[in-house]
Image (cartoon, rainbow, N blue to C red; front, side, top):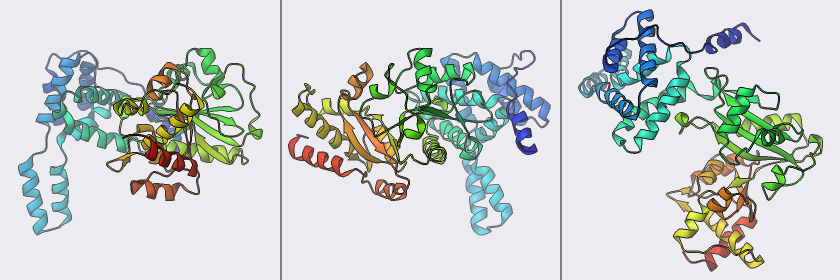
Length: 414
């Protein structure tokens, strides 16, 4: 490890320590004092007090705190107007600096000062998670969210992220979080987790940030297979016989889970998939196909809106269900696919490859999509072209899916 990397590890792995004692002043007064502080020791102590106070608040107090930060630490529009006028008449570096300083709301600097406390980054991520939850009923807080999202995008850019494999030998606290954060196919027990991590044809990768070294940001579970699977039970069955990795020709991304609600809107999935594809291909050059086995979470609701009925299970119903799913997945609203998982994968350069009925018999799978799942294919040679098509509002599909969608357009009511 280089000296610089060693220094970074030492800095980032410091844990949060609370303030020494309490301060009776209201949190608003503490915030004003933090913004006015000129020495680092005072600022750090004030920041700790604010973070400690916030952690003990209920939602009513947090709403009041967010409202205070949004309103009192807003942009001074008069200062912005004056600075803009000066810059328009003289585009000097000095005037530009004054304009930039005026255009940045003080609440961004407030968040930076809170983040100077070792271990505070995770607390600010949790704070934004609280904000997003309250924002649903209080849209007036959106300005604060824009500022926090701007800062978090800088602090969590790809250059700071570390890709780590997760296996059965990983620390127990990390494995517990994998169980808790799994958002696609629930992990029922430690034995269930072991079946996903220990066999030689199973892999799991996660992005971590040095400021949160034991807390994954996003992780993907991978199955190495021969051929493209059409049902999740084929991958998760208890009694299956593991495949030797060198015998596999396909890598299947069957679960991708975002772990931090406070980082919503800050995308890691694109970088994660690209990095995992590169790592797997480098280790096992015989892998030729990189594909997902994904849920279709909006399908059942979309069918209900159109009164399309629930398939009964005959072969004709199976074909009809595939046509309906193809129609839904290729249905574009405002230039984007309706389905959130489709938006994610197509927006990362994948194509809709195939559709499978009775692929997810779990209660969640039945409720969301009547058990239908879809393969999204990642072909490194076509990703750039697929992204161009996606940007033009035309999701890329295989010929089979194109045919199914055309048949649905002719046969299904809208």
